[in-house]
Picture 1: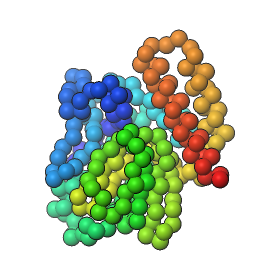
Picture 2: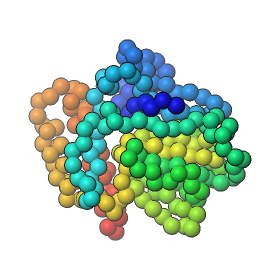
Picture 3: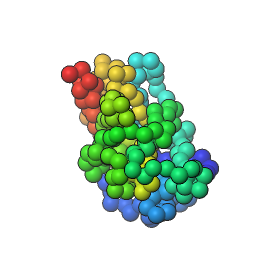
Picture 4: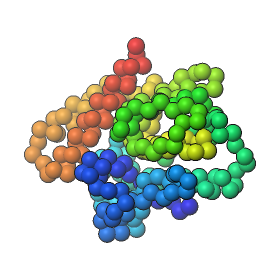
Length: 230
């Protein structure tokens, strides 16, 4: 599969735009099917993305800096269910096999786990083995994974996609993700205050919507950081 940029479709879904229609010339949102799900929501485009999408800055103690627009470097490195079925050996569909990754780090790679708890635009979902197929868009929040040794590991994901497939595989692709213990709470609160001040300034509707998404994301990030302190 060719490398292709992908973005969170929250803004389009909020506007009521059907994901099967053309959004702008040479920019199309696609969802392909093989049994249930083979690919994720993708923006395919020959030039930089037209829709300006808020890019969440990851607040890691190890690496706090301003990155360039994530849409220009982010790609969906996803195999379809059809390809996995053809190339991979037989799998146990009674197991939950998780692939969880961001463009810069792979946390789980087709790893057997017991449970995945995740926040989507339609609400929180708890995924266990033999869960029904589902496709969702992530909202800023905590991704909790219980491994096969009953160890609970928590991450913060800015946005992305969730796919639970009929063969027992589950893919969580985050635009950016970070372990909760790596969140710099002071920096997150500083960035939230900055975004809230900018929200009071005169600006175009698109810019205001981007700032509002920024505020919501930092609020979720701070809430997640506080939860691990308890």
